Length: 539
Image 1: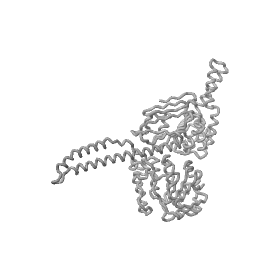
Image 2: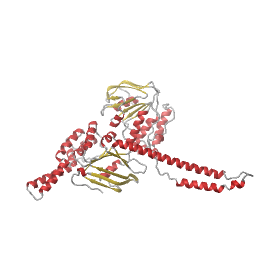
Image 3: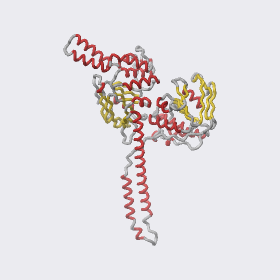
């Protein structure tokens, strides 16, 4: 059920959802989602790939009907999906007019009420006052200017006659987002709004959301945006009782609450597993006593020993009942990333790049020297050559000028920004093939790290073809393959792409502790904050 007021609600704006359940293809997507957003609230929605974040936005917007549960909205609503359909006949101006429909309607009603007031029609005073209040509430006269400001700040096309079909996906998205930010909606439902934005656009989006007087529901993998904007977080990842959790206190409150919840969950699970094992051991011991302890040896204590048999039988039955009655009702907790111990060759240069360039991709000479334990962050605008420099360091391409030298004994692993084309091999087979290549080439000393021990992929995903894994799961597999080499130098190009916020936090913590040399190329604002004390190489 969905309710929407016709006039701007402002301070009365709110959105509530109760008991939302939705399944697709027999698989539960949303399970018992409850939320409440009032004017001034900014709710972040987080969860792993496939957790139902986009589905939730569609349900809250009324574009998708839940199997069970209710949704109530009061106030005008603006929705930013990850994708925007293109009508070849529509222009940028048409899209602006569409998003400002409410503003246009309010201004028309004000003009009509003004005419009635001039003509001194009965009831004109009341109608004019209502129309004026609605226009003032929306700041309707300033809406087009606010859209123009956002178009400029987001780097969006502002030519209103430009056909949408001639714009790239990113350009269309920025135009629509600018319209939403300028339209004065009471409620904003935003699905990954940082896609296609540069640093200036991100700053503008952050400021506008913090200033928004209505309610906001924000799905994002951008930890910096979540940290800077949200007042509470809805976590759609699995919980101990299978229901989503809402954490207050902003993104920091979510991180602390989620960690405490995870630790309680793991403690209860381990305690139940230990108790179950104790009962099983007791039963096994009682069964052993029953099979051997009551049988008398020939010629001695026959009567005494034989009378023990009924008691032993009863003991077995009691332990069988105890084991059957013991319920392991705490499900296994979610995976936790466990980084393997990486390579360490202290005191010697592992990798050195001297004044390297790459024709058409890295024009200005760059140098770097890496030893065990070194840290380096490569930053720069898009197209500056970050990925090209990483490829040069990894040995994937040869420099046009300059030289790259690697210590022969040093293992270098590279997580590139682009994943290879997915194969029909299972995730486990792909990982084992990568490990086998390392072993046969002599590039791996010591035992390989089992994929299941890294905590990157659930057991159900290990046997599935790589092509059938989600983009996030494929990215996790590539990270696992990079770590399998136990590298002395780990090169990570945009490592936060497609990974959940929880895994990124765990990965960041592991990178800070490893003895290997680590190089990260990123535009992720939170990762840049987390590595603020690392040396920078700006391109």
